[in-house]
Length: 518
Image 1 (cartoon, one colour):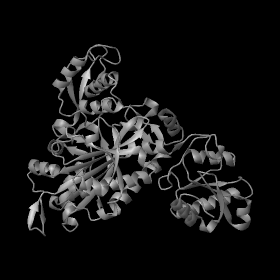
Image 2 (image 1 turned 90 degrees about the vertical axis):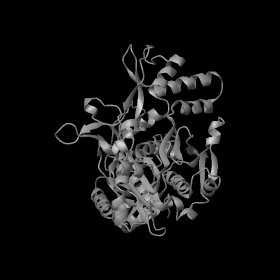
Image 3 (image 1 turned 120 degrees about the vertical axis):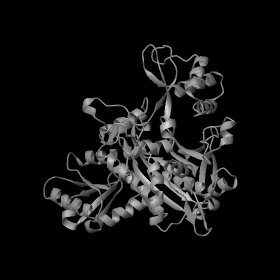
Image 4 (image 1 turned 180 degrees about the horizontal axis):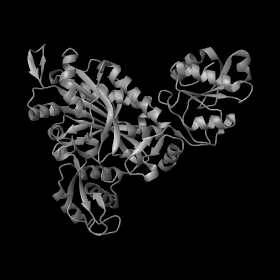
């Protein structure tokens, strides 16, 4: 299915291979004239859900960081992948991936099931396995080059950050940021003081990050330039409560627990947010709160709850400083794909930057009359992977509703690329001019409306369905006589007549209801 969806995405303007005229460099995609507005709507939906609703704050920090910042965060020394080269064809591969694949194949040969293969794959990717250990493991498993069958040399280490030099004089290295989080940590002291010096305090941002992947493939799943939506929620560890937890405590969350993974199960279980805290699956209320909100958010974007889960990362996978990490994984045509990482980062980042910079990054807690280093829970969203997941979950093949023989996207109206399309029934008799007036009025009311006059009305309906436009507004001869237009709903083809003057309000009403009503 992924090939079919990618073909549609490229054909209909969702995606464009970057620098296509010169031959695409893997790991880079542009968002086209249909994909870009949809991506912005996903980002805006996140902003409303994770920034505005809870009164959190938003910053925008720089994308080039001095080397010392990323030494303090651990990225210079540890942010990389084990790399190995074939001595025959000279191609490069990730050593941990080769080991994982080999272990998975052997597990499959033993008839132990897909879930055991997956568990062993996770164990094979443990960050504790250094290049020397991977070299020994590859030789033990007899792993040869998957391209030519040749032998491999020693496993080395490849840092995934793009390096540059700041200024004209050499010797002042910097890096394109591998995540947006470090800018937020460094901005924290000023944001804290500017907003009343109170905890808890949520600070988020949406922005580009960069990772020089060894062999990016799988479309939007592994990119070298990608967009993140990250929130750092700073709080007093002596009071790890969320003020709005009561709103979500009964919300069900699907979790693949550590116990299930160790026992060889790949089945997620449902827990309420309250149960996650009571059973000590989540380390605190704040973590459980965000897992519940992430569940709500994904469902609102058209990703069914049964198609994603939170995998509680095994202790061996979790960084030493973490109080617990959960990966939201979506079932896709690429398999289970991580799209959100929610981590209890304790005080690691602020403490590391304080130690390296020599600056005091602690804060004074008035109620307790003492200074502390805040702890942090971090929900980190990958926009591009979420974009792909939405494409997959909202894709509908031809032959469904209305017997249509074209594929289409059932996007929720809040993230559909365009709010509506305005179509004159004919180009003549003043219908085109009337429709042009309609589209201008809609745009002035904040509706991102398309205007389409090319081809038969049936073909225009099909084009709009194919890009997921939820409503088509048609101006016909009755529009000229009575000032009414028809509104057609994408999913079932149902149409209602609406007074032209009421159109913006009625479209908002339809979008909220998810259908057209008389």
